[in-house]
Image 1 (cartoon, rainbow, N blue to C red):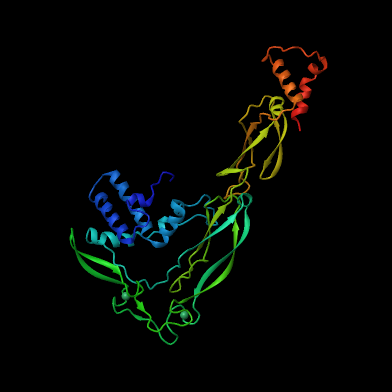
Image 2: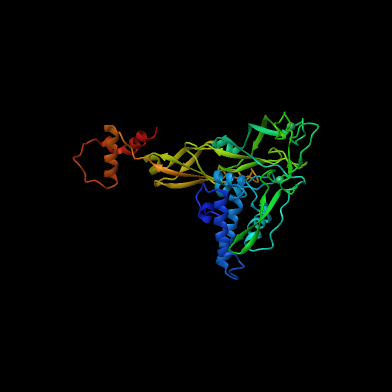
Length: 391
Ligand SMILES: [Zn+2]
Ligand SMILES: [Zn+2]
């Protein structure tokens, strides 16, 4: 999915393109790549599918908003997919019937689906929210409280939007169909064009006397506190789905869901990639040469690690099981990789400098300088080196 093309790029439109522009762009591509026009051409088929997917998303205002905000990630099954229902929008849920009815009904003639006002129960739209958490909260999970504005069905008019005692009337423009049909001349001849009714916006009903409690919207809004259980192992950009905390449904349909996107703060020393954590730890010159115990920060606190004598800079060690828990099973954890970086000492005092010179000499790297005559110093230079850097 990483190399998936940008939907706007696929359609060749810019981000501010309006519905008509999108539709025009898609029709052009669909005409060019449609399988009926290019039988057996796999590349054309792939292009057709790509364009159709892009148009499916961008022509739906709700999905387009999600895409603009989250990119392709909005429609992927984010990371875990555990029973709890993580992840973003379900692309498979896109109503392809609508798209084909809309575009191909008039493009290829026939096959166009008739779209009528839906008076059956409909699930409400999904709501989106965001929660900010720390690196550690993402690793170990946490509870957060969110305040959101939730719509509820107006108790005065029971969601009809009409003044009590009155009821919505059938839209005269579309006779309650929710759509209007007109014919148009096109390069394919006269085509039948179907549009959502502009007067009733597809509901098939018009409210004459509006309910005063909700100003005809059928809904009232209130602030509600929502508890969000953030599971251990969640990653930046993933969403938590809270069922039926979205917009109310219509005609007795269930509420939509609340999708809470998690925004994980950067950590000053830890970096994360999937279930693994990465960091660097300093090693003194003496520790690197002589080996010894170093203390390393992990998300579980400090741990001690035995460094082997002769450890080179940029040596990477693995602290098994000190990484991020799996979203599916928090007992399964990734690893923590630590890059040991040998610090070259600066600001040496005279004693340390002398010790280093001796050290170099002992390694055979320097010609002997004028002997300083101190037998004692010579004997203990390794000890001195240790003293100098072990602090
Ligand atoms: Zn009302
Ligand atoms: Zn109408």
